[in-house]
Length: 569
Image (cartoon, rainbow, N blue to C red):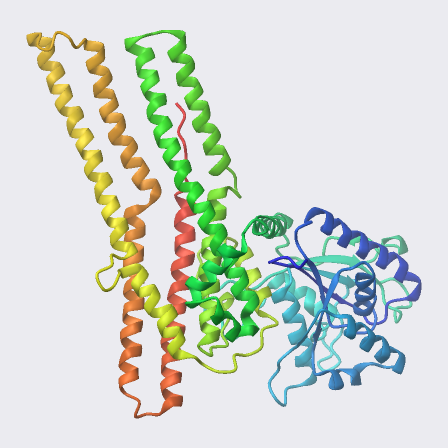
């Protein structure tokens, strides 16, 4: 069974692998792949390569024998690519492997482009769409035949390694988008053309071993492990989502489950959206329940402490206080603690789902743009796993065949406007959250004022001896509970983010309202023709999508900066 999110392993390497080295290299590759399969059992591992002679065909062959999926990434159409194979036997092996691939991606280059551009685009595709790249490399930077300089051969093994480390930028990326980088793992390999070992290989024993890259760059394995663990967690939890829940999510997105059949090329995107949406909703419910329990149990824990400190200093009240504190800490650690806590999962899965929503409707609108190239972010690694998986999910999708502007206008722009702002007598999400924020503020102030009143009454009681049936300790206990209730209600409201989210939703709703007005205005002026009308509407849809992506990234940062903390004093 194919997982919702795959783990893509790219292969780059030399074409002239020495025959005597193949056994060592094959053993190292298959051991590493099996180790990854054991670490991430719920995740499908795909091998991406160009099926070129040498390293590519060697790795593809052993991967297929061991039941790994292979995706061919070809620099040109098959007939054109086969011109680069030196022997009929190599072509037969290529065709045999190609027939066993689970998918084939043909790299797109401009008409009339230099032949090297196909291989460069192949390398860029591996970097853009893989979680990790295995480089079967001698560590040497080739001498370019055209310039004579000691620089990577365009699209060659060294060039791909440098792409992984330095990162690549799409020509259509936003100026402040982060370059796509991919972790590169070096498997030491030589070439038949070498009369002696290259300078970066100290002895023959190093052939078939993994070594740190011999070039400078950011290769933080912790980031890679974090990304892969998040993919595995997503896939594991996705197995628990029922088909009914997924269908409900699709119906909410597209208006009906039947509409999905109209967009077969992006069915995988829609499926993953439904999973991310359902998982985020489940985590959101857990978050709300956890905060309610923490707030309520904190109240009782402090109340027990106040009783123990004044009204009844017995061991039982002390035990009750400590037990309640322990329960609060346990709930906090289960949901809120850690770098990949359930709260972080909720936020990241929600952002992932919303970014997929943008990508889906861009495609339906006839826009070939990729969301992964349109993020503005101030922290370079916080969106890595989301961006990487957006790239993986879109790299085999063909260009959109047509634009369905009316569908996008109704099911995305208008629906999002209605969700955030409300329409036709229905309150929007922004107003609903602001109402909740005001209610909690009023209640918090009410308890605070009652606490002040109780303090005044207590002071008068001490001087006049009124309310003799109420002891001083009981009065102080009531005052403490009133102030505690005020503080807890304020804290709960802030942690739920009612007011902050209301402001953000109001702004987002305004964006969609303006986009809808612009599109309705364009609908009334069709004198410039249908083609121009579509083009102008696409411009509006692209703009509102970029704004939505920016808002999603900002929301993710907000949650991570304001992570919930339980103070234990």
